[in-house]
Every structure is written in structure tokens, then in C-alpha cells.
Length: 95
Image (cartoon, rainbow, N blue to C red; front, side, top):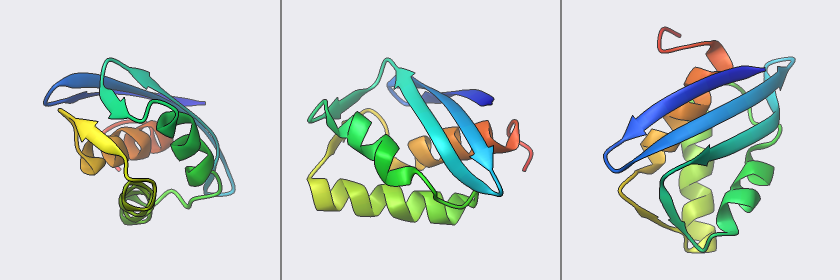
């Protein structure tokens, strides 16, 4: 299981990933960031299951989810979440 902590503009995003055959199988996201509605975090984790470990694919799915579910991020961006997830999956900031 991979782990990474990413410092967003306002908040820390902590991610644990379990990868099988190049896709996300399990995803845990926690930290001190603000995301509304609050249950969107659980939904995002489910939405990203089976996503390939590719930064652009992860970012695209996050942006799609945010738009579809009308999610608001305060102090962080979709890119922050995508980086935290990607870096957790590949073992750090050097893909």
C-alpha cells in the first residue's frame, strides 16, 4: 500500500493507495482540507476505483466528479488531489 502526504494551499491531503495491475483497487483519503458536501469524499474514493495509475487519467476523473456532483473544494484544487493520489501510487514525487 502506498502513502503520500501533499500540502495544498490550505490543508494537508493524506492518501493511501492499493494498486493491482496498474489500477487503483483501494483508496483512502484524509487530512485537514475542506470539501463539500462532506460525503463527497467517500463518493470520490469509490469513483476512482479501477482508475489507471496515470496522472492525467486521475485528474480527469476528479474534475469530472467535481462537476457532476457539484463538489466545492476550499483551499485545494483537483490538481492537489490528483498529485496526492498519483504520488501515493507511484511511491513519491519522482514518477
